[in-house]
Amino acid sequence: MSSPSDAPATPAARLIARLSFPWRQMVRRGVERVLARQGVESLGQSIRVLPRRTPYDAWLARAKADTPVFEGLVIQDVRTQALQPWPVMGDGVKGLYLRLSDCQMTDAYVLELPPHVKTDPRRHMFETGLYFFGGPGHTILQQQGKP
Image (cartoon, rainbow, N blue to C red; front, side):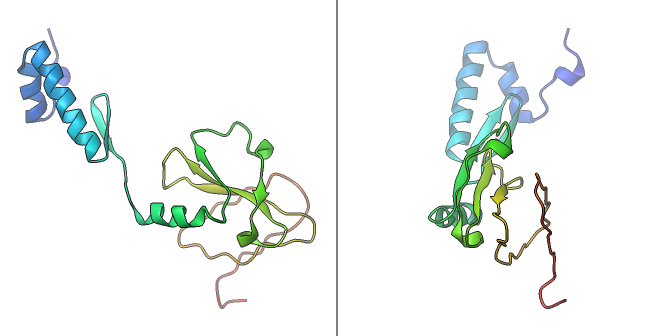
């Protein structure tokens, strides 16, 4: 006997659950195809909307011309990742922009600065976290127009 928590939540899901097994499979596959064309991914009982053609995607496509980019799920040890020259960040700076699993909220970048080299000033629209992996030096955080 099924419990109330096993019951489908939406009217459409309840209707599909009442169909015979072959019909249920066919309807579910059709719904998944329609959702996939609209940028929605099925994750078992839930769905995830995949952003498409966002301003972020347009920016990243333009930035790839002069930005070294890593796209993927996991980096085992960021300290061993191969870095490439990144002139936009400053003369002599090596780095890598990390786009982690199509997520627009957890992107990051890794920089390696040789001795006596600094990055060009950066502006951030949102909050920024800084992590240091070693070496001497200092960081200056400053609001624009303020000492």
